[in-house]
Image 1 (cartoon, rainbow, N blue to C red):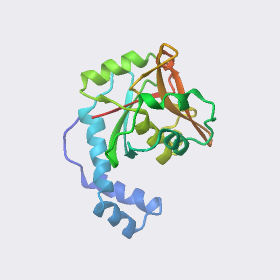
Image 2: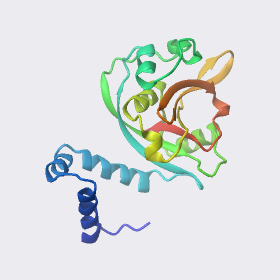
Image 3: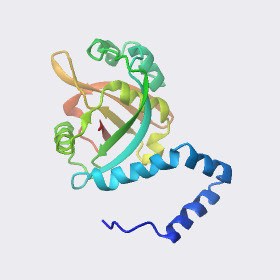
Image 4: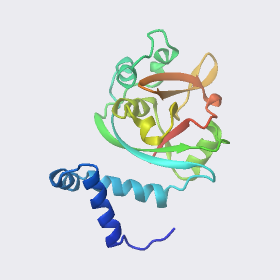
Length: 206
């Protein structure tokens, strides 16, 4: 990967893209002033330099506001359009107690294996090698809440974002996720070993 500086032609391309998408001068300046554009550039740096995916995999970076104090059922409802009241994901909240830290901006690294060959344990080994931490379900629920069209942006329908701090349910290792399908979102509780398909994105943080 080249470390050469950004060229003027690349800067012009960004400007032209903003014009094509109907972004006004005021909106563009606001993105510069409030740090949105800076965070976008930080995410590119993180994705392309600091966090290299394993062979055949890919990473994406999201910044999301997470409320770790949120009551479990409320967090589920905010993330989901159709999680039923009897669903198992609603039964394991005691294993993820709220933490008094208010709402914070959290940078989330998503790992996906688009060509197959990925699984829960492989994803965790990679994250450990990069010094990344596991995410808890509230972080993944926040992704669902604030990114209702994430599957469209990432070009996968359906898709799952998997919280990587597991829990015990019915004497087995389970993990929470949010899945997207068309206009629907649902939180889920599945066996950790079941996250093996190309539609799974494993969530980690620094």
